[in-house]
Image 1: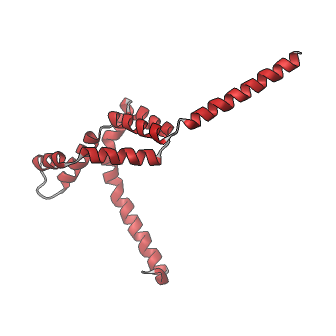
Image 2: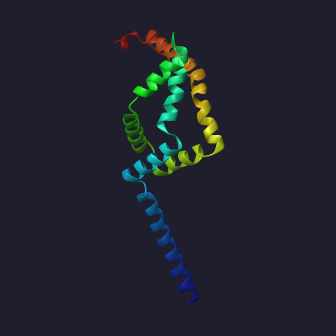
Length: 148
């Protein structure tokens, strides 16, 4: 009898774990990913992200000024950007991944990373592009039949 009770308890545990696991999987719906993306954008507002991009870009342009940067900021269509970001996140990440991003960027470390990310990318991107161009040139020279 004790053996039968143990088997029953084990089967119940396995069945319940399977149901809980399936429920976790069912949580990853398009609607839930979109909702999670909206919460992410509350932590990382589009306006704040774009301000950093516009300020960095304006500073590198001839005649760049704070007034010009502000004019660009005023002209941006934030609803369009928000929609594009929500669509991209919902089509790229799972609910759990979006929630993890949101949680990370809610921390002091996450906010610090986001503040520094454009500076980091500005330093790395030119090297990446140069290396891609170099490797493409090497491939094209080594395989002239593929030039088109």
